[in-house]
Image (tube, rainbow, N blue to C red; front, side, top):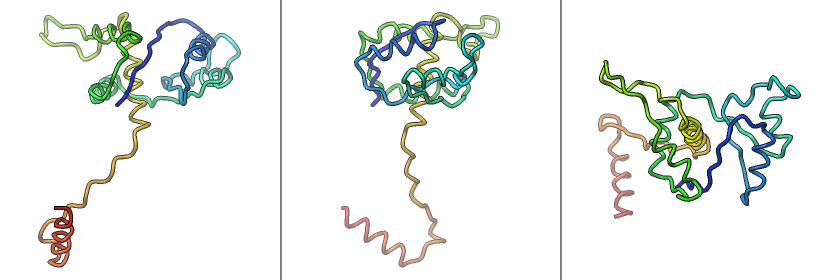
Length: 169
């Protein structure tokens, strides 16, 4: 399961603001997942990237791989059933996710392919980044068992497989 225990949103603040907010929380952090564009250099300031500024402020940034919006939305859909939210601490973020939507095209009678960019976008983007980061952290799946057709397996191999099955019955 994935526990979503807190939510904070702001914009237009320097990296130092967010570092201060994170350090003030009572949590032990391992990795600070950030969007792939955090490696850009700031035009204003000392010319460091956001990632370099985060490291200097005691954070441990790691870039979420670049992805399309739909890839992120689909990753979030897959994980949603495994998530448990702190309803009170995440109230604003949950409301943004409830309201996140695509516009309806009345003429074509379909929803548009891209989500509507409005006040819900930042929370939805963060949620997508969470889902994509989870994919990076998840252990590698075990390989599927080898499947062989009857014309490629020997009789002795079939007997051995049957004996193994009987051990677990």
